[in-house]
Length: 471
Ligand code: SAM
Image (cartoon, rainbow, N blue to C red; front, side, top):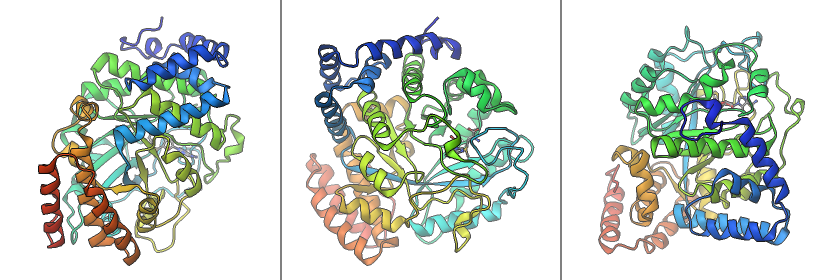
């Protein structure tokens, strides 16, 4: 029986509730009156439930679809302004005991070189990332209790935080590792991680079991209840996602929102982020072998509908997507993107992009400086800010900041100051020119005079060589 407050995945991701939702959405896809009511509710910026959101996703009335996109854009501006946070993935090890059929790290792939970075190699990778200007990383590993035990992950986090190279520093380490125990989540929390990210891949239990035929990841319940264990272990920033292409996107969409509702109902705080990966070509993986691929139009609509339904949740898109696609979807709700990513283990220290241990093909292969410059020219503020989590504003405290619309007096100046650091330490001549202009313009947007004056003062201190100011 569907129950968002239950701690059992079978209840909060109830299959029948998803089927009923899809049926309800299909029946109402041209119900103008209902769709209008839902849009009116969404305009109050309190979000939508999975049923209402599914109706919007199914909507087949062109004028109302236009309104959906328009509203998504507006909500993004209201809550997130024009800031886009930047990060990079850091692959530590591709040893894996699972059999995920879409991932080249699967155990049966015998020709893929298996690499596990030593702490010295991690140090070199991190220095390479710091030298690009990155301040936030998402660490990635395959699942292998022997090669990648929790102690290895904890040592690696310690190493990453300890490296201070020139003006570089990694100030937030997010973690994307396999589902684990409450005890291990507590250890990750104590190690100072930012968000714990885990993609459900697919919420459809039957498909999930087929797509994960062997290894610990085969256990749907263990995987789907991981965020509950993470919360119980004290991690209050968790990141959800599905791998689009594996199952019907309408099913995933409804279930993803049900998962978010469950976290909100049970722990009083919804997901900190939702990621939007699509299957990509990889070593022995052909995306066309999966029947549920979605095109850019559907992808954009999913993103717009999630933006409307969960206004306070960060939305992430990676370099799996091309520059053109990212350009299109950023405006409908994306608040974080990766830049200059290498999805191979040890890839950042190689001059040429290595392909042999890559997890998937990267579409957007530009440098971080090029990505920053591109964002600036489109009117966005590239941000390397990590202030919230370092000031203890995680979970419901972050949500409170978001809901009280204090972003313009807090996140906005923080974004400008971290952008300034980037421009001075890593920016090309062109990026620096565009960026300095944007900073001067954007300073005027800070509403609180005292905050504005303090920001001007901090910016001049950054010019003089000091670093790491934040509100
Ligand atoms: N091993 C961890 C786990 O068990 O969840 C996750 C880390 S994995 C390095 C990160 C994510 O990459 C996976 O959750 C999956 O969604 C995604 N991924 C795997 N194969 C992919 C492919 N061929 N194309 C795009 N994304 C892929």
